[in-house]
Image (tube, rainbow, N blue to C red; front, side):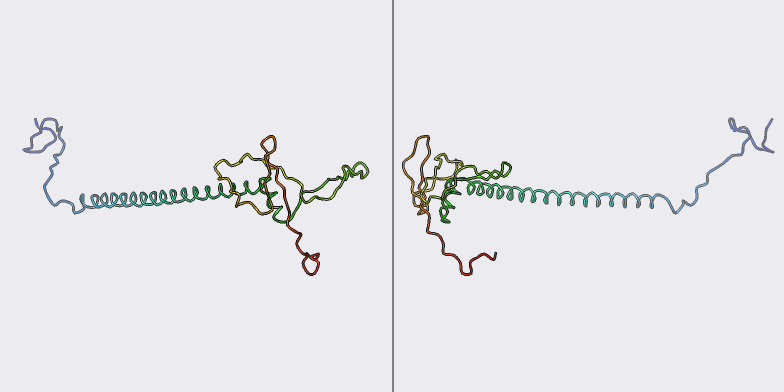
Length: 188
């Protein structure tokens, strides 16, 4: 007995009377793999160009960083040199030498006015003396600095024999006072 078929059709096992589908070789569709392949190639090329641009930007940043680090090192060295110069010029013996060059002399006896206690004067005031000895330490505060030669000393300072305790007494002979400027100089 033949089921579901019609005259002269045979039922194949496993088909159960369904219609048979056959594939006929014909024209292939025009849109195949070509657009997909082009898209993949374009994406890969764009990715490589992006990586190249990123790598170039990172290298440029690296060069800028190394340049700034060198500049920081140079400026730090300059700052340390200037701080060393400030420290040298702020030392007591340097200040005393500069004051002597300007014609200044050490103060005499000092007096203080005690305002909270009724304006009481503490101490005894006295005039400045122009040849009072100035104590100077012989210890060099900056060990790497060469010692000045006797020809480097100002003409107003003359060292004397070392005193006990490693200190040297220096006599300061100030320059004569400068002549007052015309006009009194009070209008500053």
